Image 1 (cartoon, rainbow, N blue to C red):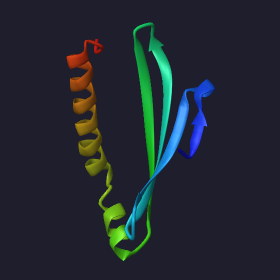
Image 2 (cartoon, rainbow, N blue to C red):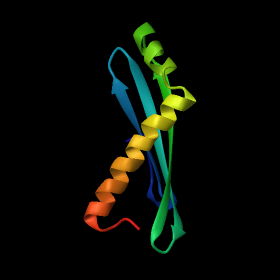
Image 3 (cartoon, rainbow, N blue to C red):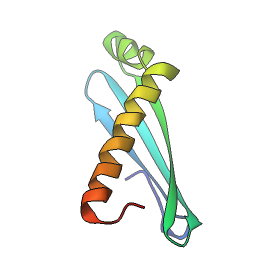
Length: 86
């Protein structure tokens, strides 16, 4: 973990793809209602090689929107199965 600020409901971590790229992922949570939390996730990608730069270059806005929608579907599906989604 790169940053832990539980009192601010924020954390960050680093993910490394050796010889390719690194990503710093930051998650900030905030109450949206008594029964809901909004999570804001940000990513910073850095290439470590030419191949890594090519990987990072793929992260266009359109690619990111498709990628993050997959996460949304997976998380909401999990929450729905556990009875926590609204």
